[in-house]
Amino acid sequence: MMKIIVTGCTGFIGGNLLEYLKDRYCIVGVTRHLGNLKSTEQIRYEESDYSIDSLKNIFKEADAVIHLASQKVGKQEEEGVKAYIESFYILENVITAADMCGIRNVINISSRCVYGNYTETGFSELDATHPINKYGVMKVCGENLSEYYNRTRGMRIKNLRLSQVVGYPMKDKYMFSTFLDRVVKNEPLDILGQGIGKRDYIYIKDVCRAIECAVQKCERFGIYNIGSGVGISNKDIAEKMVEIFESKSKINVIKTSPKDSSKIILNVEKAEKELGFVCQYHMENILFDIKNRKRGD
Image (cartoon, rainbow, N blue to C red; front, side, top):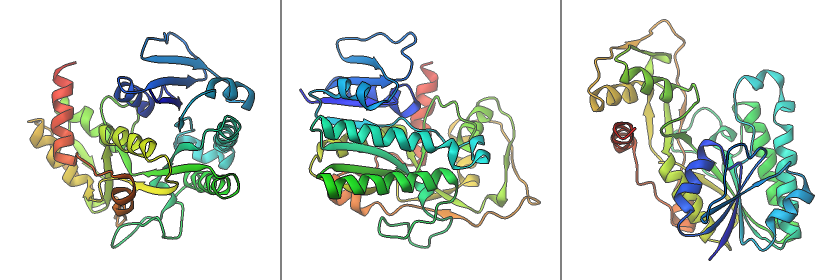
């Protein structure tokens, strides 16, 4: 059975990924603090300070590493790139430890934030990067570091540029999670930017599938867009939520807010061709699936 290391295993993506993979692989989840985590027959948990020495011991005899441990975008943007620099060092340690253990197959999570705010046709992996924030700047640095190791050490590192990830339950305060919470409570939904801007969203279940596809394609390396390839506005999402959840929430478009003319959509042809990944969920069936999951809570 293939042995896979998953760093940052206690985050939203990490927790869902472990559940998704555990029946088909030997999984080792790596985290800074074990807390109440208990290893099982399916998942072994390891605590690490993410130093090279610590990681080397954990990576022994593994076939692949999925690197999820990273500082998320948020209020730390005000602190500058220093808020993200540790994540860059950790990525270097992960790659170095993998190389020392003979592991070539490494999957690193990047972001749509490396692109700009507008595209007519969908951002391609060949497009120049124009990060929209400092988080995106550091993701570009991580991609460049990965490409360096691919070129000089024969690594097979795949950087997956994820579009906006959504799912349930999420602890973030972004628009999707906020709307979802308010719709269930029949509270009003305020649409900023006049509801014009469009984003590419990907469901957590598709994210897990995409990562597994990347693991399976062990000889592939480089950068891959992972998204739906479809743009949808905040206003359209709000309307679909109200309809699907049969909510009494009222939608208020704040016309005095600055116009949002951004359009962030990913071209996903490369991932389909080289990784065999195609999204199974789009916004309507994402919301139906979340509705069914909430019923089971």
